[in-house]
Image (tube, rainbow, N blue to C red; front, side, top):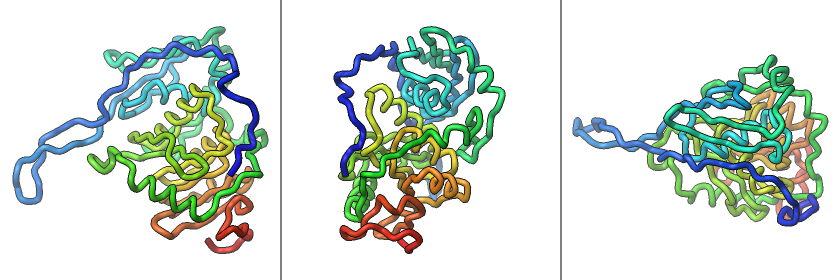
Length: 292
């Protein structure tokens, strides 16, 4: 699978924002009683409020593990289209004493008020929110069509996810998202209390690294809602895979923009819902409308 994007990120000169490094431990230990009536200690995920301020204007409070707050904030701003370019951001300062993340831009953000006037409460865990018109930028999304995913690579990705060390295995109660290379190798794996937080954190890391999505695979443990479909497409990633299912609106949007979506992917089972032209069975392209 080849990347259709051009340009070498290493040669592009960019202004890099100043970032704190305020990650918190992802889990805490608490007392519990097991099925035998014995007192035990249990590992559970942390959950912390983080209020985001953009140029001193309060935007939203995110509930998060707090393991990668700076990446979460950057990805949130990118996916909500509240800041157009990473160069526009001067600093991201996370302070857990006040449970806040202060983002300072280089020239202010005059139109943010207009975007905040229209918000949609999504079906994300904990009720996510997307600002502005959900559909307004769909026609601007142009995903590459010269990349392919075959059944063997999909199987390799699923196996790599299964082998991944995770908070879920130790403590449960979290969602995970992974960014993978064209061969199924996992490049980033992020867990949080909501899958929309996890995808935002990956988007933030991609932004910082100037990483293109055209030859990447995106995996999530959660259901594929309209919000998740839009965020994946906004990152320029043409492939979206989940062990869970796909909502009706997510399906309609995926087919409109040509995103290749695979759901219910566990073991050898999966369902190909859209973007059939990029998927190959044993070297042969999938046929539109054929069962996966």
